[in-house]
Length: 456
Image (cartoon, rainbow, N blue to C red; front, side, top):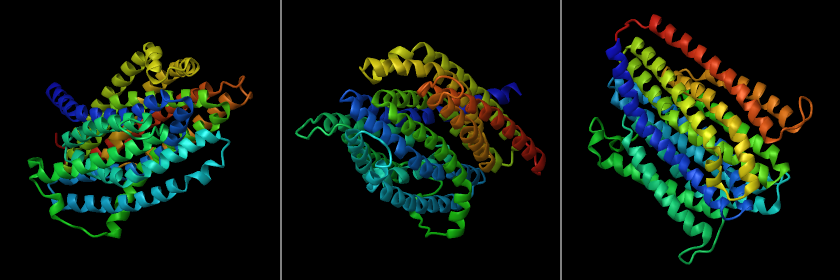
């Protein structure tokens, strides 16, 4: 057993390291947008913040569908059913095409939606311009997400990491040029973030396509040497698996969007501080996001090999590692809150409120790590429906009502503003983590006892 334990820890570390770096690079692009727009003006920071919170639920809903491809590829690859892998990838492509069309229609007409909220006119102009610019890159992002799920499902994590590095470098350079008006371009402020991000999406997508075509790592079969037209039965099956993941991401991101829009009545300072806190929390979560995705891959791979006990062992190890990462990240964030907040903005009021929110956010991260890693292991078992219900209950039945009461009313205490919403998120996530661990325990035990072979 000690040998198997060490072997699995090493396997998860090898997989999760590049995946974690890829997540960090993706998140770093958002952090870069926030920092660079924040140093341009407070209104541009608020506009990009609101735009990001509107865009994020739609993107996560679409990317969640692509993530449903990971356990399919992992299990089929473990069983050496390569044609099944290619067929699944092409059905994911068709889903991406439909999703990108829907998102682009919404973003092009976003101005009418923004009028429903009491948002400053200048902030609203930045938000709509940012979203309409980024619309150009949505198809590339969703195709890239499918290709990333394909490569990671094969336990090949290097392509997405390299694409992330190239994309971040391009995004940083384009942000500098378009936000501040360099090399003869006009200063676009927050809107420039949208154009820079859109171009970076295309660069990462093109890189992934070229890597798959020319790399020898894909010798087991040539993805682009096949073509599969839409098969609505297979698309429905893939959506059935990916949709709960998508909805889970959607309602989580949607909750933050709702919080941001609710806080908009307090002005740019509160909105910006909340957005920076959420941005930092997402950045910190990347340290266990690699373990989360690695668990999906390892559990799916072991089940494809008909080794359920090994899948359960991998899940247990992964949850323990995720909890350790969460505690370390929370402690680091608690003690480094002031210098981290200073990286985002030079505005003293925004910085001060951000530090206050991070004291609650640090505790939130500890329980979020356990919840997220457990959900990743469950995806490896293709169990996505019940985790979705658990998230809906903890977030929309507990976190948001409690957060609204604490933050916007005097029913329980004198209104705490943004701190009240973060307190509600902490309580709801704590409950969700406990429920998710219990679900993982029940599912893994049931699979061990139900599969015909139980081989390490």
